[in-house]
Image (cartoon, rainbow, N blue to C red):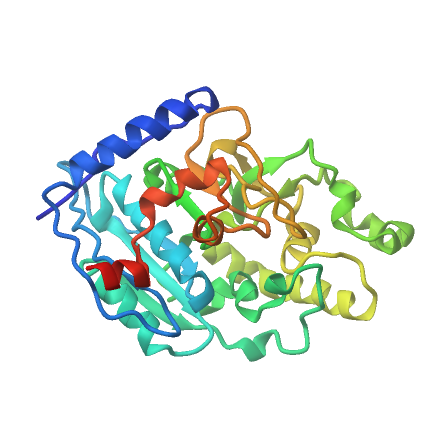
Length: 350
């Protein structure tokens, strides 16, 4: 049965409780006649998922592709599946979305999971050669930030086909509650990258005291108005990235970090060093980030004021882990409607 959402959602903070009530009712109503079948037996390595409905284009959709890049990893696969489902469910033209999945090595089980969970999905999987960053990664404050696949976003222009000139890069711990085509159509105004900027954030805290004490390093931002932006949601002009050699520019800062510790977090600071103050800032609704708490303890956080198009569990706490532990944060219930995971208990009870 074809299933399509023709209206996107926007979540003002004041309507959070209303959304939690009405959304679950609506989801149940719209999926009553949809067959959600088991895709395969649970694996010791990767989780199993229900099959997603088939999402079809609305009337008036053209054939222009929207390119979305997300990483594939066994530890975050549950998040990736939820992200994909949310994107398709809120898109008016879901068949126009082409997913580019990046993984560090071929994994038949992960590939089978994606193929059977989303039988109608348009996608391609690419191997990110982790030796590209071998010896370049410095230890950060959280081990998950040091994984080579976390750096794949630096090399999108080298990995994606030459005919892909623009891509939306998304982390695996997000859900989209609006039509992603709105993000795709953002005017970059000649910039290489677009993302929500947070100029009220304390920019200095992303770098060490040694960085700010060194006049040469500190002058990196001279003549710029650098603001923090989160690299988990970016619209990238891939062509300009290639032409400008931005992968190499980021690598240069990674090399300096190896010689002299100038920042604390994984792949984010070198992006800031190269691009902060030079990006196209877009509406904050496209990255309601920090829902996973800080990078050390991952304590619960509430939503920021304003409308929401994308929810992002950046930080240590991931919604699927907190839900499984029966200690979820309030915001984690906004993620759960997109969770297609089949628990072992469900298999046994079925």
